[in-house]
Amino acid sequence: MTTTSMKDVARAADVSVGTVSNVLNRPDAVAEETRRRVQAAIARLGYVRNDSARQLRAGRSRNVAIVVLDVANPFFTDVVRGAEPLVDTAGGVVTVCDSGEDVGREAKQLEILEEQRVLGLLITPVDNSSAERLARLAAHEIPVILVDRGAGLHPHCSVAVDDVHGGRMAARHLLELGHESIAFAGGPTSIPQVDDRLTGCREVCEGAGAGLEVLTSVSLNVTGGREAVEQMLALPRPPTAVFCANDLIALGALQGLTMRGIKVPEECAIIGYDDIDFAAAAAVPLSSVRQPRAQLGRTAAQLLFDEISEGPGHTHRNVVFQPELVARASTAVNL
Ligand code: RIB
Image (cartoon, rainbow, N blue to C red):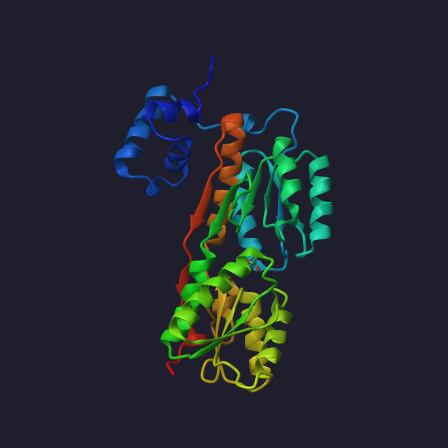
Protein backbone atom coordinates (compact mmCIF):
# COMPACT_ATOMS: atom_id res chain seq x y z
CA MET A 1 0.00 0.00 0.00
CA THR A 2 1.56 3.30 -1.05
CA THR A 3 1.26 6.00 1.54
CA THR A 4 0.07 9.47 0.62
CA SER A 5 2.81 12.07 0.88
CA MET A 6 2.73 15.82 1.49
CA LYS A 7 3.57 16.21 -2.19
CA ASP A 8 0.43 14.28 -3.16
CA VAL A 9 -1.66 16.58 -0.97
CA ALA A 10 0.05 19.65 -2.44
CA ARG A 11 -0.64 18.46 -5.97
CA ALA A 12 -4.28 17.65 -5.19
CA ALA A 13 -4.85 21.06 -3.59
CA ASP A 14 -2.78 22.89 -6.19
CA VAL A 15 -0.48 24.47 -3.59
CA SER A 16 3.19 24.14 -2.64
CA VAL A 17 4.45 21.56 -0.16
CA GLY A 18 5.40 24.49 2.06
CA THR A 19 1.76 25.56 2.17
CA VAL A 20 0.73 22.05 3.20
CA SER A 21 3.36 22.21 5.93
CA ASN A 22 2.02 25.58 7.08
CA VAL A 23 -1.55 24.27 7.16
CA LEU A 24 -0.33 21.46 9.42
CA ASN A 25 1.97 23.56 11.61
CA ARG A 26 0.96 27.22 11.34
CA PRO A 27 -2.62 27.21 10.03
CA ASP A 28 -3.05 30.84 11.08
CA ALA A 29 -0.42 31.75 8.50
CA VAL A 30 -2.56 30.40 5.64
CA ALA A 31 -5.54 32.14 3.98
CA GLU A 32 -8.82 30.48 5.00
CA GLU A 33 -9.82 29.41 1.47
CA THR A 34 -6.43 27.83 0.86
CA ARG A 35 -6.46 26.18 4.28
CA ARG A 36 -9.88 24.64 3.61
CA ARG A 37 -8.77 23.38 0.17
CA VAL A 38 -5.70 21.71 1.67
CA GLN A 39 -7.67 20.22 4.54
CA ALA A 40 -10.20 18.83 2.06
CA ALA A 41 -7.37 17.25 0.06
CA ILE A 42 -5.89 15.75 3.25
CA ALA A 43 -9.27 14.23 4.11
CA ARG A 44 -9.95 13.03 0.56
CA LEU A 45 -6.52 11.38 0.17
CA GLY A 46 -6.47 10.08 3.73
CA TYR A 47 -3.05 11.71 4.30
CA VAL A 48 -1.64 10.81 7.68
CA ARG A 49 1.26 12.82 9.01
CA ASN A 50 4.47 10.89 9.16
CA ASP A 51 4.49 8.99 12.41
CA SER A 52 7.59 8.80 14.48
CA ALA A 53 8.53 5.37 13.18
CA ARG A 54 8.59 6.61 9.58
CA GLN A 55 10.17 9.94 10.45
CA LEU A 56 13.24 8.17 11.65
CA ARG A 57 14.83 6.41 8.70
CA ALA A 58 16.02 2.87 9.39
CA GLY A 59 19.68 2.59 10.21
CA ARG A 60 19.99 6.18 11.18
CA SER A 61 20.86 7.77 14.45
CA ARG A 62 17.93 9.05 16.45
CA ASN A 63 20.03 11.97 17.57
CA VAL A 64 19.18 15.54 16.57
CA ALA A 65 22.18 17.75 17.30
CA ILE A 66 21.78 21.41 18.17
CA VAL A 67 24.98 23.47 18.01
CA VAL A 68 24.64 26.78 19.84
CA LEU A 69 26.96 29.76 20.28
CA ASP A 70 26.77 29.90 24.07
CA VAL A 71 25.08 27.27 26.17
CA ALA A 72 25.06 29.73 29.12
CA ASN A 73 22.82 32.12 27.15
CA PRO A 74 19.15 31.50 28.07
CA PHE A 75 18.23 32.47 24.51
CA PHE A 76 19.56 29.13 23.33
CA THR A 77 18.03 27.22 26.24
CA ASP A 78 14.63 28.49 25.16
CA VAL A 79 15.31 27.59 21.51
CA VAL A 80 16.33 24.04 22.50
CA ARG A 81 13.24 23.66 24.69
CA GLY A 82 11.13 24.76 21.75
CA ALA A 83 12.63 22.06 19.55
CA GLU A 84 12.54 19.15 22.00
CA PRO A 85 8.82 18.21 22.03
CA LEU A 86 8.78 17.51 18.28
CA VAL A 87 12.02 15.51 18.49
CA ASP A 88 10.63 13.55 21.45
CA THR A 89 7.39 12.83 19.55
CA ALA A 90 9.43 11.56 16.61
CA GLY A 91 11.21 9.17 18.95
CA GLY A 92 14.49 11.06 18.79
CA VAL A 93 16.75 12.74 21.29
CA VAL A 94 18.38 16.18 21.32
CA THR A 95 22.12 16.62 21.91
CA VAL A 96 23.33 20.16 22.58
CA CYS A 97 26.86 21.24 21.57
CA ASP A 98 28.33 24.57 22.71
CA SER A 99 30.63 26.12 20.10
CA GLY A 100 31.48 28.98 22.48
CA GLU A 101 31.62 31.30 19.43
CA ASP A 102 34.86 29.45 18.51
CA VAL A 103 35.14 28.34 14.85
CA GLY A 104 37.75 25.68 15.67
CA ARG A 105 35.58 24.16 18.37
CA GLU A 106 32.55 24.29 16.07
CA ALA A 107 34.49 22.54 13.27
CA LYS A 108 35.51 19.71 15.63
CA GLN A 109 31.93 19.25 16.79
CA LEU A 110 30.64 19.14 13.20
CA GLU A 111 33.30 16.56 12.28
CA ILE A 112 32.19 14.26 15.10
CA LEU A 113 28.50 14.78 14.39
CA GLU A 114 29.12 13.86 10.74
CA GLU A 115 30.91 10.66 11.80
CA GLN A 116 27.95 9.85 14.04
CA ARG A 117 25.57 10.27 11.08
CA VAL A 118 23.16 12.20 13.26
CA LEU A 119 19.58 12.35 12.09
CA GLY A 120 19.79 16.11 11.56
CA LEU A 121 21.55 19.28 12.69
CA LEU A 122 20.15 22.57 13.98
CA ILE A 123 22.89 25.18 14.18
CA THR A 124 23.57 28.85 14.86
CA PRO A 125 26.94 29.05 13.09
CA VAL A 126 29.68 31.25 14.54
CA ASP A 127 30.19 32.78 11.10
CA ASN A 128 30.27 31.62 7.48
CA SER A 129 33.46 29.57 7.84
CA SER A 130 31.42 26.38 8.37
CA ALA A 131 29.47 26.83 5.11
CA GLU A 132 31.41 24.18 3.17
CA ARG A 133 31.18 21.58 5.92
CA LEU A 134 27.47 22.22 6.39
CA ALA A 135 26.89 21.80 2.66
CA ARG A 136 28.75 18.48 2.84
CA LEU A 137 26.59 17.30 5.73
CA ALA A 138 23.50 18.12 3.71
CA ALA A 139 24.94 16.27 0.71
CA HIS A 140 25.40 13.24 2.98
CA GLU A 141 21.69 13.30 3.80
CA ILE A 142 22.11 14.99 7.17
CA PRO A 143 19.63 17.87 6.95
CA VAL A 144 21.01 21.15 8.29
CA ILE A 145 18.64 23.82 9.61
CA LEU A 146 20.11 27.25 10.32
CA VAL A 147 18.67 28.77 13.49
CA ASP A 148 18.52 32.47 14.32
CA ARG A 149 20.23 32.99 10.96
CA GLY A 150 18.95 33.49 7.46
CA ALA A 151 20.26 30.98 4.92
CA GLY A 152 21.27 33.61 2.38
CA LEU A 153 22.72 31.66 -0.55
CA HIS A 154 23.40 28.55 1.54
CA PRO A 155 21.44 25.39 0.57
CA HIS A 156 19.59 24.91 3.85
CA CYS A 157 16.29 25.59 5.52
CA SER A 158 16.51 28.40 8.01
CA VAL A 159 14.49 30.09 10.71
CA ALA A 160 15.39 33.58 11.81
CA VAL A 161 14.13 36.92 12.99
CA ASP A 162 14.37 40.12 10.98
CA ASP A 163 17.31 41.49 13.00
CA VAL A 164 17.75 44.59 10.82
CA HIS A 165 14.19 45.58 11.70
CA GLY A 166 14.90 44.70 15.33
CA GLY A 167 17.86 47.10 15.31
CA ARG A 168 15.69 49.80 13.79
CA MET A 169 13.03 49.28 16.49
CA ALA A 170 15.57 49.59 19.31
CA ALA A 171 17.14 52.77 17.92
CA ARG A 172 13.76 54.32 17.11
CA HIS A 173 12.56 53.62 20.65
CA LEU A 174 15.57 55.43 22.15
CA LEU A 175 15.36 58.40 19.77
CA GLU A 176 11.64 58.80 20.47
CA LEU A 177 12.55 59.15 24.17
CA GLY A 178 14.73 62.11 23.27
CA HIS A 179 18.18 60.50 23.18
CA GLU A 180 20.40 62.21 20.62
CA SER A 181 23.37 59.88 20.86
CA ILE A 182 23.33 56.07 21.24
CA ALA A 183 26.08 53.55 21.98
CA PHE A 184 25.90 50.12 20.31
CA ALA A 185 27.37 47.30 22.39
CA GLY A 186 27.57 44.10 20.36
CA GLY A 187 29.70 41.10 19.77
CA PRO A 188 31.86 40.61 16.71
CA THR A 189 30.04 41.79 13.59
CA SER A 190 31.28 38.57 11.99
CA ILE A 191 28.16 37.14 13.67
CA PRO A 192 25.51 38.11 11.10
CA GLN A 193 22.79 38.64 13.71
CA VAL A 194 24.96 41.24 15.45
CA ASP A 195 25.83 42.89 12.15
CA ASP A 196 22.14 43.07 11.15
CA ARG A 197 21.11 44.65 14.47
CA LEU A 198 23.84 47.25 14.08
CA THR A 199 22.79 47.89 10.48
CA GLY A 200 19.21 48.64 11.52
CA CYS A 201 20.37 50.85 14.38
CA ARG A 202 22.80 52.77 12.17
CA GLU A 203 20.13 53.28 9.49
CA VAL A 204 17.76 54.96 11.99
CA CYS A 205 20.47 57.05 13.65
CA GLU A 206 21.79 58.32 10.33
CA GLY A 207 18.26 59.08 9.14
CA ALA A 208 17.60 61.12 12.27
CA GLY A 209 20.99 62.81 12.42
CA ALA A 210 21.59 61.18 15.81
CA GLY A 211 25.01 60.19 17.11
CA LEU A 212 26.04 56.51 17.13
CA GLU A 213 29.10 55.24 18.99
CA VAL A 214 29.87 51.65 18.01
CA LEU A 215 31.83 50.19 20.90
CA THR A 216 34.55 47.75 19.85
CA SER A 217 33.11 44.28 19.85
CA VAL A 218 32.58 42.69 23.21
CA SER A 219 31.69 39.12 24.05
CA LEU A 220 27.95 38.42 23.82
CA ASN A 221 27.69 37.98 27.58
CA VAL A 222 27.53 39.80 30.96
CA THR A 223 31.28 40.44 31.07
CA GLY A 224 31.02 41.99 27.62
CA GLY A 225 28.33 44.32 28.93
CA ARG A 226 30.52 45.55 31.79
CA GLU A 227 33.42 46.06 29.36
CA ALA A 228 31.15 48.00 27.02
CA VAL A 229 30.17 50.40 29.82
CA GLU A 230 33.83 51.11 30.63
CA GLN A 231 34.45 51.88 26.94
CA MET A 232 31.38 54.11 26.76
CA LEU A 233 32.19 56.08 29.92
CA ALA A 234 35.72 56.70 28.63
CA LEU A 235 34.34 58.58 25.61
CA PRO A 236 34.69 62.38 25.70
CA ARG A 237 30.89 62.74 25.57
CA PRO A 238 29.29 59.43 26.62
CA PRO A 239 25.93 58.73 24.96
CA THR A 240 22.83 58.79 27.17
CA ALA A 241 21.60 55.38 25.93
CA VAL A 242 23.08 52.02 25.00
CA PHE A 243 21.60 49.40 22.65
CA CYS A 244 23.00 45.99 23.52
CA ALA A 245 23.08 43.20 20.91
CA ASN A 246 21.58 40.76 23.41
CA ASP A 247 20.15 40.75 26.92
CA LEU A 248 23.26 39.26 28.56
CA ILE A 249 25.25 42.28 27.41
CA ALA A 250 22.41 44.50 28.66
CA LEU A 251 22.52 42.84 32.10
CA GLY A 252 26.27 43.45 32.22
CA ALA A 253 25.78 47.07 31.16
CA LEU A 254 23.19 47.53 33.93
CA GLN A 255 25.63 46.07 36.46
CA GLY A 256 28.52 48.21 35.17
CA LEU A 257 26.54 51.46 35.25
CA THR A 258 25.11 50.69 38.69
CA MET A 259 28.61 49.95 40.07
CA ARG A 260 29.72 53.32 38.75
CA GLY A 261 26.81 55.02 40.52
CA ILE A 262 25.07 55.93 37.26
CA LYS A 263 21.29 55.78 37.45
CA VAL A 264 19.36 53.73 34.90
CA PRO A 265 17.38 55.07 33.06
CA GLU A 266 17.65 58.61 34.48
CA GLU A 267 21.32 59.06 33.50
CA CYS A 268 21.66 56.28 30.94
CA ALA A 269 19.00 54.14 29.24
CA ILE A 270 19.57 50.50 28.26
CA ILE A 271 17.79 48.27 25.75
CA GLY A 272 18.75 44.67 25.03
CA TYR A 273 17.70 41.97 22.55
CA ASP A 274 16.02 38.53 22.90
CA ASP A 275 13.75 39.32 25.89
CA ILE A 276 14.99 36.34 27.91
CA ASP A 277 13.22 35.87 31.27
CA PHE A 278 16.08 37.58 33.16
CA ALA A 279 15.39 40.81 31.26
CA ALA A 280 12.07 41.37 33.02
CA ALA A 281 13.52 40.09 36.33
CA ALA A 282 16.49 42.48 36.39
CA ALA A 283 16.88 44.99 39.25
CA VAL A 284 15.81 47.61 36.72
CA PRO A 285 13.55 45.62 34.36
CA LEU A 286 15.16 45.75 30.93
CA SER A 287 13.56 46.93 27.74
CA SER A 288 14.33 44.47 24.98
CA VAL A 289 13.57 43.41 21.43
CA ARG A 290 11.79 40.09 21.79
CA GLN A 291 12.70 37.07 19.68
CA PRO A 292 10.11 34.22 19.63
CA ARG A 293 12.66 31.79 21.03
CA ALA A 294 10.55 28.67 21.58
CA GLN A 295 8.88 29.20 18.19
CA LEU A 296 12.30 29.44 16.54
CA GLY A 297 13.19 26.06 18.02
CA ARG A 298 9.84 24.45 17.24
CA THR A 299 9.87 25.68 13.66
CA ALA A 300 13.48 24.54 13.14
CA ALA A 301 12.55 21.04 14.32
CA GLN A 302 9.49 20.99 12.05
CA LEU A 303 11.57 22.09 9.06
CA LEU A 304 13.97 19.25 9.85
CA PHE A 305 11.27 16.58 9.92
CA ASP A 306 9.58 18.03 6.86
CA GLU A 307 12.89 17.75 5.00
CA ILE A 308 13.34 14.16 6.18
CA SER A 309 9.82 13.12 5.20
CA GLU A 310 9.85 14.94 1.86
CA GLY A 311 13.12 13.36 0.79
CA PRO A 312 14.99 14.39 -2.39
CA GLY A 313 12.04 16.42 -3.65
CA HIS A 314 12.28 18.73 -0.66
CA THR A 315 12.41 22.46 -1.32
CA HIS A 316 14.27 24.45 1.33
CA ARG A 317 12.22 26.98 3.25
CA ASN A 318 13.50 30.13 4.94
CA VAL A 319 11.13 31.27 7.70
CA VAL A 320 11.54 34.80 9.06
CA PHE A 321 9.71 35.98 12.17
CA GLN A 322 9.24 39.59 13.16
CA PRO A 323 10.73 40.91 16.43
CA GLU A 324 8.67 42.78 18.98
CA LEU A 325 9.68 45.77 21.11
CA VAL A 326 9.11 45.32 24.86
CA ALA A 327 9.48 48.61 26.76
CA ARG A 328 10.27 48.41 30.49
CA ALA A 329 11.84 50.53 33.23
CA SER A 330 15.35 50.66 31.75
CA THR A 331 14.18 53.14 29.11
CA ALA A 332 11.25 54.67 30.95
CA VAL A 333 12.43 58.28 31.02
CA ASN A 334 11.72 60.90 28.40
CA LEU A 335 14.58 63.37 28.05
O1 RIB B 1 22.81 34.17 17.97
C1 RIB B 1 23.61 35.30 18.21
C2 RIB B 1 22.97 36.11 19.27
O2 RIB B 1 21.64 36.32 18.86
C3 RIB B 1 22.94 35.37 20.57
O3 RIB B 1 23.79 36.02 21.46
C4 RIB B 1 21.52 35.43 21.05
O4 RIB B 1 21.43 36.17 22.24
C5 RIB B 1 20.75 36.10 19.93
O5 RIB B 1 20.36 37.39 20.33
